[in-house]
Length: 312
Image (cartoon, rainbow, N blue to C red; front, side, top):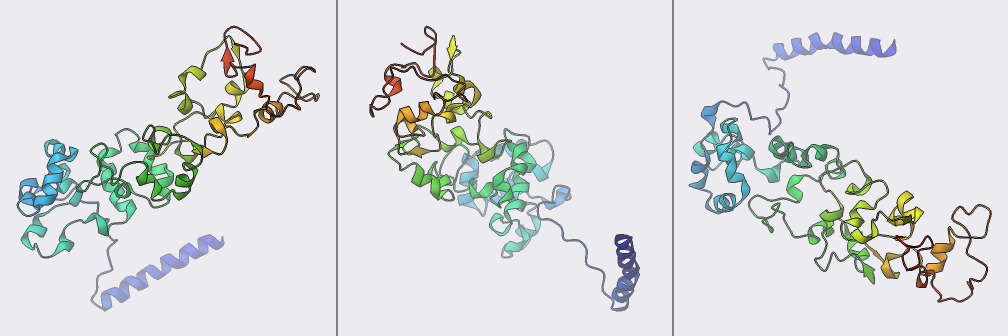
């Protein structure tokens, strides 16, 4: 009831506002038009890319060597073609070249506005539909934060910097993790951030390109560990690689193990308690030998085709 009365109050004030505006001779302000809403502009307001080239020589060179020159063949109309597919109709800008406000300049747009223009074409491309729900979009990181049409540092994807330096600009903690003694070979150039993460969005946390078990990304490089095996190591199938390893960029332990002592990791499951579902080690195992790693005997710990105890 209170909400309904509030609405009636607002509606009741509307005629008064309109009457005051009419008495002052001023029209009520129209809703602000978003800068990307130019697709329906009359065709006569567009001048084509050749006109832009006559003044913007440097920008036209990068444009001609990039992938966006193909937009000149877009059959949807002039608002989807050439420079004006991104910067909007250029006739007014050409008629008054000193007035830069007559053309869309991406540096003056918000991240959301700039991305909306990009997604007009790229929303149907790979990963484009996921960007609207991505963590980058929700934190104000738009397309132009990573991609550049006129000053790209890479030909592939037209990135503003090479990986991983591009990612390190925001993710400083990752640079520290990759500096640990044992780390994924990203700084060495053998692996890219985008091999494991999808910067355009996804359904998993941290933009991972992986399953809930977080192992499919690992198997891209470590295919021999994926099986299938006759004798499976259960944690690998139920919990994934993260049950023994800490594959979060880097670790102080060899092989990115979650425990410095291998036996401690094994004994988290293989204990003599009644709650142990994996089975306790036999009594003749001397766990007091500090450097006696379980994997010295159980070498095929990821799975075996010949022995249920994972012997060679």
